[in-house]
Image (cartoon, rainbow, N blue to C red):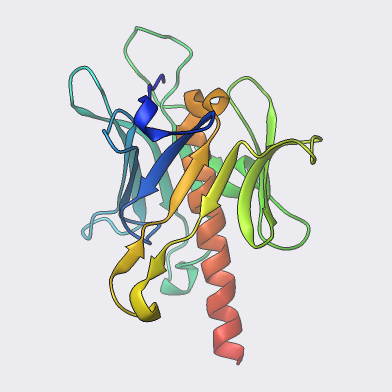
Length: 205
């Protein structure tokens, strides 16, 4: 997967991508001219399956790149384990085929404490989501002091309850643009885990 960005979306040497909704089931992630455009979709008639599509900048068609499926038969598993799969990129230019299903735990190893987790890109390089000053950041594993490759900035609402005054966004370094699909899937999993944990705490309180 290759994507391009315009200079209007650059922050120094970074790209700025925006979420349209504060949802991990239905939202989009894109830059201002939509040259990078991801769609996260969960249909009401298939609520266990979330699809991640990317807009082809040449054909302007949406292309499926990944799926996240909730496993478990009872409603109590709503925030439980998931399995994921990606379109295989091994045979570039040939008919696209699905890779195998893998557990969300195998894809994104949870952090020992706090919010975060580790995953591997298609080339075998490790990356880690962690929080710094209450902001979620993506860094290379083993390089804790390096400038973050992705920094998440949360949304804001007028008077905390009305429509958003600022959409959530990512500040992305160009070197990770080629596997944004995996970064997006890992982010969705982290957010689902975080929100599930918050619901448990809220019920206890």
